Amino acid sequence: MTCCSPSGPGRTTAVDDEPLPQDGDTEGMVRLPGGEFLMGTDDAEGFPADGEGPVRRVTVDPFWVDATAVSNARFAAFAEATGYVTEAERFGWSYVFASFLPAALRRGAPRPEGAPWWCGVRGAYWRAPEGPGSDLDGRDDHPAVHVSWHDALAYCRWAGVRLPTEAEWEYAARGGLERRRYPWGDELTPGGEHRANIWQGRFPTSNTVEDGFRGTAPVDAFAPNGFGLFNVAGNVWEWCSDAWRVDHTAPAPEGAPKVQRGGSYLCHHSYCNRYRVAARTSNTPDSTAGNVGFRCVRDA
Image (cartoon, rainbow, N blue to C red; front, side):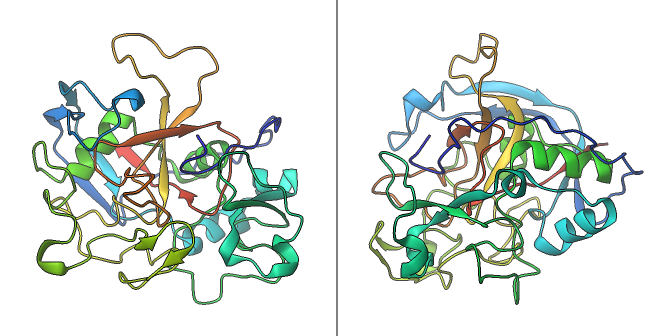
């Protein structure tokens, strides 16, 4: 789905030698009581073709959820403990937002049809988010990006946790509010206050950076929602365990992409108004880009 983060066409791999799981703990997690909630939306600003609706009653069991997305520091601990090599490293490239790149890297970089603001950059991966010459200096507390669904599963297996179901993700993101557009209510910037890291200005040519962040923000930037979760709107898309479907009464097709939730720092009302709490997108499980990360859950 190129509006949000592009897939890696033709990239296939087997994820072998995944690290063994450790005993999970709940440090940095919030325990949620679960129960019944209204999932989905019939919002006029939504995208019915994405399967955002219908509004339906869904029940989730109690569970623990990360207060934040997995940070670079946390992902580094995993990589160093296990020697895990991400799919972006195996493939040798990943997608980077074009304006983050020096001219030498932008020039001649392959760009997906329909989303020319993305460049396929050789050497881009989680430790070098903008490709050769970039690093994580000052970004230990930013979300790990260029992480595929398979990579996220490997981390979860090591940490003794799992990816959230889409229903768990939306229940957690709503923070106890019912049928609201955002995790904090229905106004995007109540009282003129920015509550999420998204694009301001004219996408993709001019970002006024009114929210203070041109790219990723720290995982605990902005105020948390009612459940104490940070950045469930904007910053980075987050992988869910579910396969993509738009008919919620039918099983997902075999080989379907995986669900992503939350929007990212590149979302803008003019083309990708998907930082709303019910908004959703998908991508192939081996896809990686500079605006995709994840957070984890654990059974209560």
